[in-house]
Amino acid sequence: MTISPARLFAVPGIAFLLTLALATGCAPDTPPAATDPTDNVVEFVVMGTTDVHGQLVPWDYEREEPLDHGLARLAPLVDSIRAANPGRTLLIDSGDLLQGNPLTAVHTPLPEGETHPVILAMNHMGYDAAALGNHEFNFGLEHLNRSLEAADFPFLSANIVHADSGEPAWPTHTFVERELDGRVLRVGITAVVPPGVAIWDRDHVEGRLEFPDMVERLGEVVPLLREEGAHLVVVAAHASFSGTSYDTVTTGLGAESRMADAAWEVEGMDAAFLGHSHRQVADSIINGVLFSQAGSHGRALAVATFHLSPEGDDGWQIVERRSELVHPTEDHLDETLMDLLAPAHERAVGEMGRVVGRAAEEWSAREARVGATPLIDWVNRVQQEVTGADLSAAAAFSLTAGFPEGDITVARMARFYPYDNNLLRAVRITGAELRAYLEHSARYFLPCPEAQCDRLVNPEWPGFNFDMVRGVEYTLDLTRPWGERVVELERNGRPVADDDVFTMALNNYRQSGGGAFPAVADAEVVYEGDESVRDILIRALEAEGEIRIPADFEANWRIVPEALAEQALREMHGERR
Image (cartoon, rainbow, N blue to C red):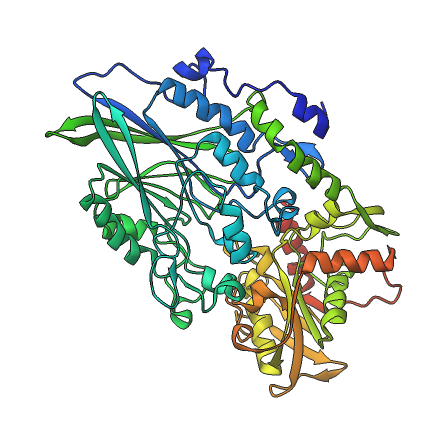
């Protein structure tokens, strides 16, 4: 059954209906229930969300259809866990809340005097604390600070400091106390964010904020929490176990994710609720630290249960710890929260339905990563026209989100270009740097020296880091090793020389160092706009009215051998030979 936005808001909620099944754990994905204390053991439950990215209402604004997830579907689960464990719960979030979907987009920048819908929802659900995620900084500190003003709970980060003083820019930690069987349990909560914010949002934070290594800062804050009487220490980490997408040596920044290291190097942590990677982790223990991760967009609630026994006059000892993921169903919906969010939701739906242009025929993205296509060429052409650059670089963010024949709405544009935080830049580069840029991009494909390999698409290289450049003609030979794949590189029929100089349009994520592309982060910036690339594309559509695939379109780049291009295309779409 298709549910319209209006119908979605009319579905009966169960925000405060605490069913027996939810309270006693009779069905799969049911929250843990309280048990009678045995041998003075008491249960304490910490719940966590992460990477919500504005998915409050269970509605897909881009596809215009209902979803089985979202914060409004998790709220009843939170209520039932609290009811089953009265006075023995906490609720935290591990960051990336204020950016990511049309609901947040239409509230950016946040008008003065308004409460951000994300904060409205979190206040309603009674969060105890939240971490700052990297995407919180996408739209500048003024928007961020204004959005957080109305929060009834603290936003935390142990590793964000003022650039001038080195002092914490936000609270590094907070304490929450609960009374369990007549004695107080004191829970210390801290948080961390990837130092890569200094790269990804350099325009907003450079000279204002710095982001020290997360393990180093946890090594300072966690002992402080213990000294100040924390019986239980919980980290809301907007980070995963390990890995980094940027060069830590040249940037001097700590790695993007280091929570596995933290488990070994920081004494005193009891649990960490992970984020950032959008993955789900039900239950993992490293060196005695319990790890869990709810995944993204309100698809699950991470629930950690601690069995505690009294120790000494006023302490507690952890007897057992475990965690699980609890998933909502379509029966779970907080009607009160939906009513609170109705005005924000309706604003987003109205904007997404706005028609901004028309496609005279289908513009497909299916083959966008195996050869030049009119669709990506159009993006690059618009970027060149706005910046006046010689060249332009862009990626195909989705291979299924092109333009069908007919009306193009804002929703369709949001599916095609999902990153509303990308701004347009242009830099000056040399021919040698352009070649290095293309070689770096080509790491999207694994080495295939004999033109025969089981797998060609690199699972460690996301599609949004495969850029295609307009303004030159080039060929990628996938039988050659990384760094030697650009076998032809010409401009207007002439080979590009190392000392040639060009200007190139690209988005600010790439220009700031996102994806660790060579040269561009330190290149001279010759154009710097404050309008998002998506808005620029929408404005171009509105100006053109109807777009047609040029009759004289010629592909400016290709993959050889052709058989490998065909293999890569099959892999991208999960097809067999």
